[in-house]
Length: 356
View 1 (cartoon, rainbow, N blue to C red):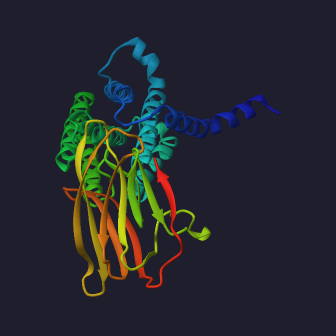
View 2 (view 1 turned 135 degrees about the horizontal axis):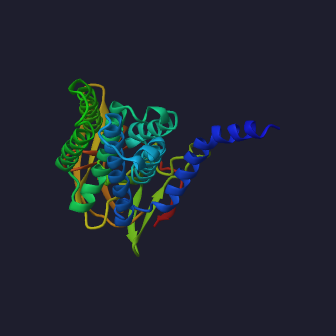
View 3 (view 1 turned 90 degrees about the vertical axis):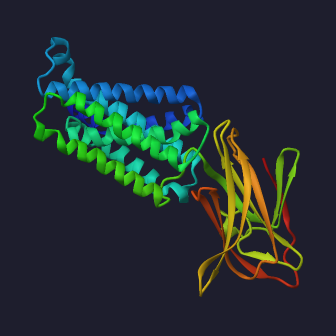
């Protein structure tokens, strides 16, 4: 076999191997979004990426005259590709760990798409428009969960504040990078930043980006929820084998005198106190989803498995129900759908399990 042919094949699949290896490495090393050492590493990536963008774009305009930079210029794309890949893979891991899949699926898939597409954009990483959009996206994605950790508060205004800071820093970096470029070349990169800013805000207010770092880690509907020795003991009807992915009551077989419990475990960083509520709604043909009750809970962050709260309802009419777990500002962390079926003669014996 020709050595050059073998080498070319290895190099061809190297980006895929690096992608898988980087993702696995980040999964093992990135433990919590509120771990300051992890965040400082990502912040260092962002600072290095900003510096590389300034050097790269100024070199394009021949605004930098240095023999060393000229020698290093061919490697700039590789460095930026590594930095952007490290940031995006870290965000995929972080958002996947803290947010429920249905709630954050669109944003996580967007991150994965950008991460995979980045491997095929090596030769485009000197394009000012692409660099501007990617840098802003990486910075905004970082600040969206870093600022709530630092400020010990999760709120819509903090997400907006993260966007404003990201917008200002990105435009400033681009101004430094393109100060020697012709005026007509400066407009489109700035428009790409603004367009990315608008897109992320649309996704957020459409509830397609979770209000990180607050997230619903787990939840369920049960016949009983009781706290015992720091853990939670729940009871539910045995789950059929064909519904192995849902280990709680749906449908909910309601016998006379029984109550319906909604259990939710909320992830929140240490020292973050966020009021959370359960919004109970019933589906009717006349009003679609009609709110039946709003029960407020209190959560305090710090534990990987999430901090637990539960609410209780009695005398639920039969039909389709949902409980929305949300902040008091109305940011939805997750939804639990179930159907209530009256069973006057009782149901199968309940099984008991413990949630640590």
